[in-house]
Image 1 (cartoon, rainbow, N blue to C red):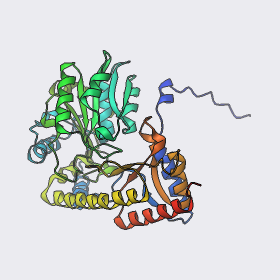
Image 2 (cartoon, rainbow, N blue to C red):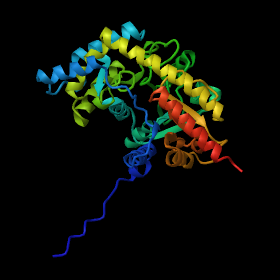
Image 3 (spheres, rainbow, N blue to C red):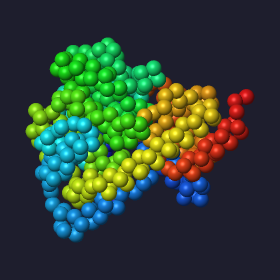
Image 4 (tube, rainbow, N blue to C red):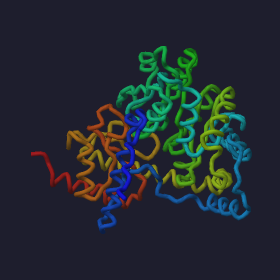
Length: 397
């Protein structure tokens, strides 16, 4: 009997506008080269190289051993919401009641919930370009329109009040800011943030602030944006500063009037964040854990302070010193008119994996590469040496 022909797959139209992470293709190629015995320096993926701090791991083990594997409330473990409230009060300069925290399966889960309760078909969300690709894709998932506003070094690669005012329309529902931002590592100045919040609130919209890298700021850390207004949405995560990437745990600080709707949507999408991860995260705020995290933050700062001048010396244009995160967004147009091709050449020929600008929007992505300093200084030095040798051997005629 002949094998039955499968029917032609029907793919929802929206999927044509939701792009994959191009960096994941590059990472897969890098892993394949490593499997062949090649040495690869990884500066492509935004994942800390440090493992989860031992006190958090031990708390996770203890939770499993005690049988703490059942569902929690959709908004999260009450003790973890209380711990976050205390952390914001004691460390981040914001007095936020525990009831306004919603625990989520990573920051991506948080963004999905926020867009679900804010965005109707055709609604617009304003955001900086370049920016983290998931932001625009979550807007599209709920049939909204992400309005990418080109930003450059003049504004620190951040939106300004003037730009928000110029792009706000009757369909605008929210402005999404990231501070520090991926891929640029820059922060929104507090006075500009206050002005944007005041304008958007007056228009009946909402400001969403991505603070995933807020713990990784290398000078004086400003208070959380939650200290500015109780009408903001804040997105954060245990992945970057707390080193819990694979545990898939994040949170929202939501205006009180939205908590019930977010709770309802979470019940229907994923019910609750992973229970063992929530119990483990309680240890993230212990004194010993915070001391470990502070040492890691200092180490990331040292890596930035090495890699930034090293890349500038090679000829990459990085006009602003990023205040946080662990990225450098470098103009590579001196070497190539196609950053995607350049990234692939550096991987294949030099064994250095870097993310091309194509992942971060449509604002001249062909000019930029993102370098992640999520590996040791020794490996960063080796990576720089390999890039320098490749550039020397491939000078433009």
